[in-house]
Image 1 (spheres, helix red, strand yellow):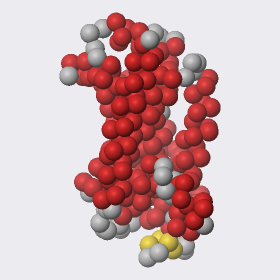
Image 2 (cartoon, helix red, strand yellow):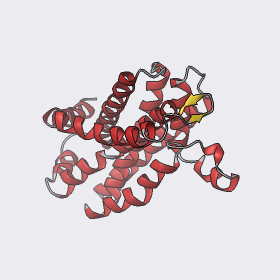
Image 3 (tube, helix red, strand yellow):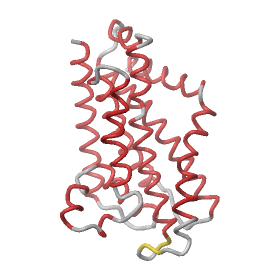
Image 4 (cartoon, one colour):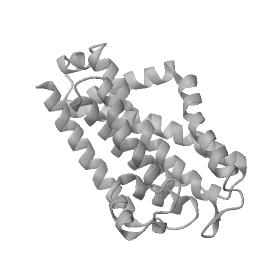
Length: 244
């Protein structure tokens, strides 16, 4: 437990030092998407029984929590390749699981802050969305999955430049194809089937249901919970491999 606290505290201190700059960076993309897609295109567009803006905001929360959770890999890369902090953690009496959980908790914290920015923006618009415990529980699970995957990618890559390649090839396509901007049911079956397998699709759908006063599918919650545990296990393995 002390090892986890030490790693997580370091991430919190970094977050505190950069808080206002990070908060502004969290707000830029959601504002652009809301203006371009929500207000510019979706003012009079309906998706089912709700406006497109109400459909879009939970998707933006899912996407932002994914990207900010996964973004912990940038900090790990810098500390690993340039500042050599990872080696210091390995030399300290801190277990690899404590290190993984601390870094994942740092990624989840950033993801929740980014989600809070979007929720505050939606409250200003006066939309009829609710953000209860089930909503934030799904944000936590989604952020945990991708923060753990971020730790894994940071451990497996050989240099800092390769990280951008992983983001461009995996995370960016997922952000646009995971039910964020359009309902997956509109796609033909051959295209919808593989997209239903990615975590972001379940997070987007679950968050949309929770924000719209509808019951969340237990299947989406279970899948995200199982994936979060599996992703943490994968991150744990990758830290062992990086140590070797």
